[in-house]
Length: 211
Image (cartoon, rainbow, N blue to C red):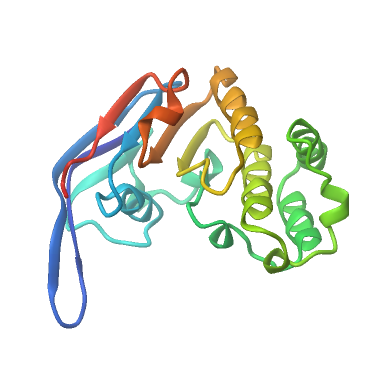
């Protein structure tokens, strides 16, 4: 289940100017069950890769292939991919936590709620006490942890994690690292600024130097 960025080029544009080139003939092949880290400073293009993958931004050149199919022609790609966005608010459909969990559960045929609560227990997160809360009423760390739990609970074979430890405290980050290190059958792409947090997790690193 490979993901391939094939000779992609992209620059941001607006109504007034053409901005600096982000990618020029950039290629990357992520193999099945490989854990790859992409690292670079803010503005180097890490989150842009996710925007291109989801279709939020459009490629100006090149192709993105998933399982050897051009993603522009795929309708069900995200049945196999779970994405942890950098900003937790972007992950949620509903403001109420209970509604979000019910929404995810209704879309899945398996017992996803069991996994949600099992993961909450692993992180020592008292999820039941948060069900009636609004996502905007809890701290950034709590919201990030809830985001992590929900993304992992979907149990997709392909994980894309944008700055996964952002807002998490040391204890929660340690638990998350242990989970990632023990995922043997998942393909994982991690995007972050600092590679030192991911020693022992990734198989290969890519450094973006286009800034």
